Length: 317
Image 1 (cartoon, rainbow, N blue to C red):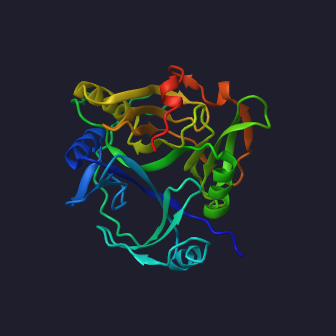
Image 2 (cartoon, rainbow, N blue to C red):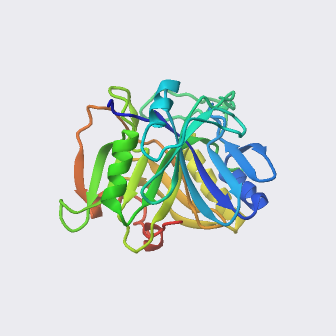
Image 3 (tube, helix red, strand yellow):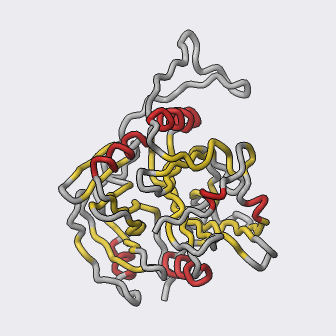
C-alpha cells in the first residue's frame, strides 16, 4: 500500500465550558471570529484557512487535531485504515468532508478535505530600516498602539504521551510524518522528544507540524498548540497586550528556540491549555540532515530564559 500522507495541519478542536470566555481569550490572542453557534466557536487567522481553532461547548477537554489531505482520493484512502470512519460530510461552518481516526491515546484525528477557504485579511506591512538592507521607511514614524498580535495561521501541535514509542510510530506511519530532529535525555538511544514535519519531498515546510514528548510526569495530553504571527513586533505586541489583561497565564517567553529556531511566547487559555505565538521558524525539505541532540541543547533557547518546569510538564487532557 502506498504511504498515506497528510499535507497540512488544519485546526485544533477543544472543549470549553464557556464560549464567551473562550471567544474573549482567542480574540485577545489575535484570532478573528468566523462563526459561533449555540454549541461551538470557530476562529480564523489572517490567512486563507476558513478556521484554525474550534471550541465546542463542554467540560474542558482536548478533543484532537485535524489534518488536511491534498485530494478526495487521498481522503478515501484514509477511510480504509483500521478503525477509521467512512468519509463523512462535515456539518459545520466551512463544510468539506472528513475521515475520523483515534490516535493511541484516544484523541480524535480528523483527516479533512474540501473545507472552504476565505479571503485573506489584509495586513499592512511594517517597513523596517535594518542595517543590512536598503532603507525602506523615510519620513514616517514607527508608532504602534497596544493591540493583540495578528495571528496568521496554525503551525504545529505538541503532545505528551506516556506510551511514547507507540504514539510516535502511529503519527509517523499513519499520517506520513517524518522526523526532523530528536532530543535525548539520558543517552542518545533514549529519545525524550521527537520533532516531526510534513513529508512534501523537495517542497520546504515548517521544521515541525507535530512534536511528541515522553513527558516528565505521568500525564498524557496536549502541551500546546502553536500559531504563526506576522513578525517579531506582533510577538511583542501580543505579549504586552495579553499581560495587560491580567487574567491569562504566561508560561514561557519571549525567546528563540534552538530546534526550529522560531521566536516564541507561550500563554495559557482560561483553562490552562498552552497557546503559542511564534515567528521566523526554520523551513526544511527532504534534504534536511536529521539530528539527535541532548535535552540541554534541544530544549534550550538561543536567547531568553530556560523553560519553566511547569511548562515542560504541561499536558492538558
